[in-house]
Image (cartoon, rainbow, N blue to C red; front, top):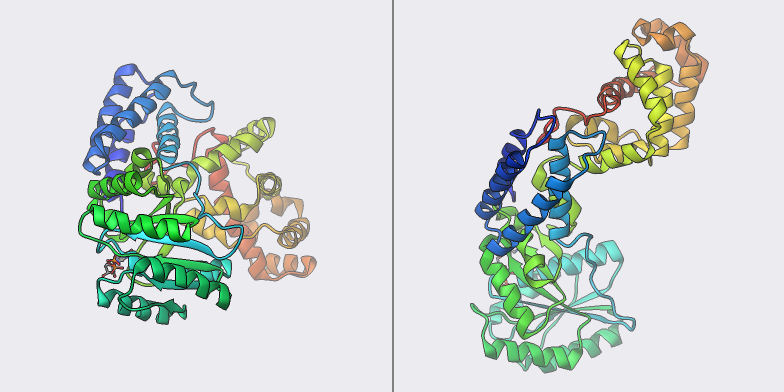
Length: 442
Ligand code: GDP
């Protein structure tokens, strides 16, 4: 998968900052040098790297370190935010026409993955957005391209419109009429590609564009070609004007340079990524998720921000002293659950935690029903049991289960969550992120 090398090198750079109570300008300069190298080795374009490092550096030197973060974590936080903004901030959606059908024109060089990913996109929008797509074969130069589109369309149960080797402009127009008549609210035009951007191709694409006025011109580029993909994006945008990019073969791209450079170089966002040869290997592109994947740390920073916003400082201090005295009881657990519920629900938080803790908590949907059951269990315990849950043997558990109208399984599950939260809360109350998260300096 993408970014392996980058993730490794960035964590090495952050690691060196760890354990420092204060960062000097020299520390930051050294870290920035390493970040610059890491990005260049990932094939991010030179100018993008230069601007990126300058921004991070400026913010890192002037930053007020948040009370709950170490300086090293603060640098990670800044790098994370700048990576997100580099990739466009939020997920960019496809345009939709106010009057159906919405026409999406797929363009790109030969072999970029236009035909396959056009079909994937049609399948995705059919499934996720209940659209009724029509795939259109406008690549009239390669008979095999028409056949290929029919094959993938067939596999996805999506109709394919074709008129053999005719005029692509006429085919596009006829396809739109066909869609209107047959109730297809989405038309995806699979246009011809060439090995290089050339005038003839651009002229043809411009003619199709002015004939059918697509809501969206989506450029398909191959992530594995790195900076060539970025150059293609720039050339297509200059000549034709594109609205967004679909980055394919991300599964085979070990470096990630294209993903990080496209938006900054062309101003046009990546909207979808192709992640495999299978017809369901497509995902909307989410800069935040991609950034945390690059940093290898789940959505840890989001979690910390949330915790900061809604953690009651006084309660946290109380909790901290109880933890020091090794007295995190089930009553405290109950209080914490209430706080977590205020933070937006346990499962949402669990989903942003990397590693085993996140997985283990993910099933624990914090809905009212479970909350009530948990309350009943805790209230069925004696004060002594609440203070010291380790005394809970099987016969006590059976008694509590009977008293709370639950089962021993429920009690065990609660105890498991209690233990997990106990270790999480210990670290949060210490004012630090949970340790042992990959890529996170502690
Ligand atoms: P076109 O010439 O632009 O229409 O490209 P195709 O759709 O024919 O794709 C070219 C090759 O790339 C095919 O072998 C596809 O199976 C492969 N391909 C397309 N998308 C992906 C992807 O996301 N991951 C991988 N691994 N292969 C892909």
